[in-house]
Length: 331
Image (cartoon, helix red, strand yellow):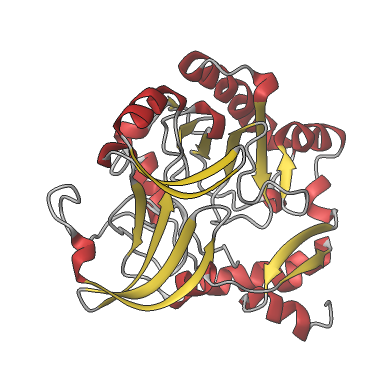
């Protein structure tokens, strides 16, 4: 929805193929494939980027979202400062140049110029970018929507079906046509299986901001609304195996993980988020995140819990679904 077409942008060069998404930016997906350059390490594709406008930026999060054109195609470029890692502090202090800006009693401020290898900016390219991508990253006002089970059937589901949001990039991952080298764990079983891999927002250099996504192999589950008790084996498998894989690979116990689903999701294929507790990942707030443990318990108590439950979620001002709720007099 706002996000809903969003996909996982896929790192560096846009590989999107669909009008929807963005989420793994890594290429945005939205996609899976396409790209402006065959080898993003061998050439600077951004040298041809022409800026049209800044969609949004955050001094606190050290990122900026830019709309423009790349080789005459619409594109969105996301620039964000990479985290300072503890294991690089000695090199940072020894190899940096300092310029004094101010000194007052015990306080001093300097402009620090770090060695190139410690002064990186992560660049995510979404190309070709659709209007939905541009709106997704544009700073906008949000509204909290109240959706009953009836609202979902009469308003949300028809909207989703009409938009035909592409999840080809998800299929590419499941079929190992893309991002196969990133897979942390996979269960090949068609009914309860899934693939676990890092989300594009995580640089994988430190576990403090760990962020992985588990993508279900079943392709007919769009969101929380489709889940019933028959999906409990799948959800329990993702919950248990995902935690075990993270413990084995990253030495993080379950007690330090936040495991949840989004509603509305960024893309309509069942996926579960695994983040380190304490890391304020986008969308982890109570108005959008549903803990997987709670989802499992709710379905154990009522097989059709999410078919009838009233759910709340935020939508941005320009989101088409928000317009549908307004037209129906539900906002």
